[in-house]
Every structure is written in C-alpha cells, then in structure tokens.
Image (cartoon, rainbow over all chains, first blue to last red; front, side, top):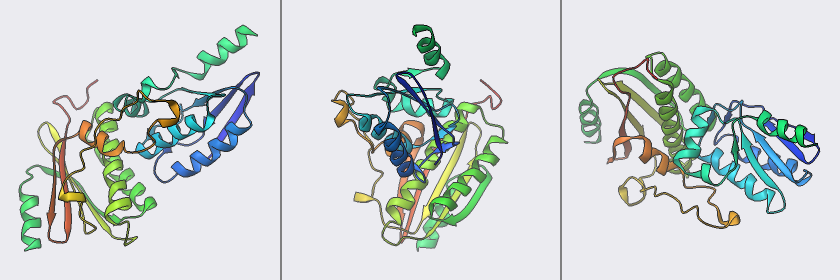
Length: 114
Length: 161
C-alpha cells in the first residue's frame, strides 16, 4: 500500500499511489494513514485521484483514518473518481467529509493565502 | 437433490452467458476473478456508471463469501456466472460455505450518520450497497450450497452516458 505525502505550511497532502482501496489492503491503508497523520500539520488532504475503486472495507478504512486524525486534525478528501464518489454518495458519507474536486483547489487557495 | 436444485437455479435465468468463473475464496484469487469479469463486462460494452455499480456489488458479494461463508474453513471454491439479458445483467454466485444468518439475505440498513465523529461507522456498508445497486436479490440454500442471484439493470443504451 503506497501512500506519498507533501507538506505545504499547515497542510499535508497524502496521495494514494494505488488503483484500489479494497478488502485486501484496507488494514495496511489504515496503518499507513495512522503513521502519516500522527506527525502531520493540522490540516490533512487525502488525494484519491489515482484510486479508481474503493469497496466497503476501503470506505471503512477512510472513515477510520478520519477518526484517527481526531478533533485536532481535519482530514479532507480530494479527487474522487466516479466509482469512489458513487460509494460515498450511496452511503451518504459524502455528507460527513469535506470533499474537493481536485487537490489544486485546496493547494491553490493555500498558496494564495500565504 | 442438491444437484437438481442447482440446475433448476440455472434454468431459471435465461440469457446469454458472458462470464463463468470458478476460483478460490482467497483475497488475491478473488481480485483476479473480479478483474477478469470486469474486463469481459466492459467489453460488452457497458456504460461507465453501470461498470462501477457491477464492480462494487461483485466486490462486496465476493468479499462476503471469503470473510463469512468460508471464514471458518479458511478456503473453498466460488462460482460466478453472469448472463446478459435484454436490459439487465443477471448474476449467480455459488459457494459451499456456511449458510447465511437466519437463512436469508442480511438486510443492510442505512447507517445513522448524525453522530459524533468518533461514533461514525467503519463497517456494515457492504449489504447496504448490494441492496441499493441490485434488483431481484434472492438467496437460496440448496443442500450444502449457497446461491445468491440478482440483476443489475444496464438500460437499453449500452454505449450511453
């Protein structure tokens, strides 16, 4: 399960470098996310633009990562591909997360603000 | 007797067979079977939105077979058959694992998300998604065998949207 990250000031962008977050990798994803959030700045953005498929285990792992980040850090999402978006919409998890169309929508704002 | 029922189940599904796979109930074998099935179905062709629905449902159903039906045994064989009908794909998934609880399809209700972040659900989405995305969802216990059948509408415009 490969996740990469880049910090820009108060924002950490975590990019999932995999095509799928499914039952086979959900636990690895959750563990790796814990490592990357424990040391993170206050705002976290999970870039899912390379993920074409996420099943219910993957969704559970993203929710777990959101909860792990805790009240002091906020995990937001960006770049949902159509099938991933469908899972979030059907389960109404799209109402729980702040979801951005693309990472650039957020990093652009951060760059402008500083 | 189990065999008779098994064949009956098959006859009850008219349509052209497009996928018929047997594979081990193990994560990487399931992933490969899913890839094979999706490659065939994309080629039908199928609208992108329908491809997504089929992939979600198949992933959930097959995960359930691995994690529940065969959980105690740790291994087993799964059969996946897909037939193409006029306006839908018809699916049949068979395994020889444990019977479903109460001998029926789990209900899969929607979660209450109006809770504190720390109380958000991390599981139990699978059957909810299956119910939402399928029609004619039927589970049968045929002797030692579990057979789950359902349809996913593909509409009349396979190239569409």
